[in-house]
Length: 329
View 1 (cartoon, rainbow, N blue to C red):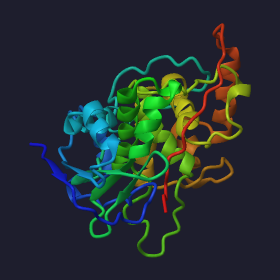
View 2 (spheres, rainbow, N blue to C red):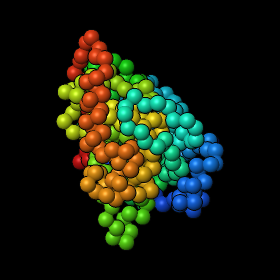
View 3 (spheres, rainbow, N blue to C red):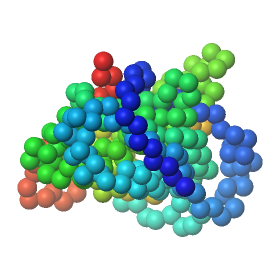
């Protein structure tokens, strides 16, 4: 049963980190070649939604937005449980066997498939604090299986007063969903820091793009996000992050590769790490090419071509976006 505890004592926040470190899996959840072969013939079991302990910590009860938060998000546990269900749905559900759906793009790649391993996050503490920015997520110093989400109280004022964010409930739910993804996504193999292994981390744009991909798929994109309708409306780089990369990842899943594609990408970060971004890097055919049959630069070009070939809406608007605070100090 989910526990929601309320504390009001002040505490020094842990050093902020955009993404918590990966935790080692247990033996039952490990993966090897035999597991992969068996997965092709064994029907997928329904993934159980984790039930971490939730805590709510309000540092400034006299701040007017402390009361506003309780009005907009009266049931924090339910809101986080819904977000966690979406994380499992869009990052930890392998489509399994079956006939691949026809993609609108030319390349033919294997149907996305992986053996899900959900990080063993044991608790999530939501801090309501008075600091500039939006929110950030970190692990605790003693045990990285315990996560902290820090939400800016002044940002609630911004949501209330900004015409671009007319629905504070929708916006705050989206922000919490984004941050909870950081509590449950993979970024590197659990033993990558051991033995002097040189496994690079993915670009920050990938990390933030995956978080906003889940938010987008969950129907929580805010009004100030604007999906590009032509290649000229894209950011210059595919890893610009946040919704810019999220729309690119959604295209990979919805058009290029099929359902489960970004879950498979997340899983590859856990199994192998971000090795071989470029096509010239031949490690397993390159990170992106081994997953989707093309290097990331080629995928970005194909995405731009697809945008140019798609029907354009009658009106185009230019959006704006908020940067997540990674280190508020």
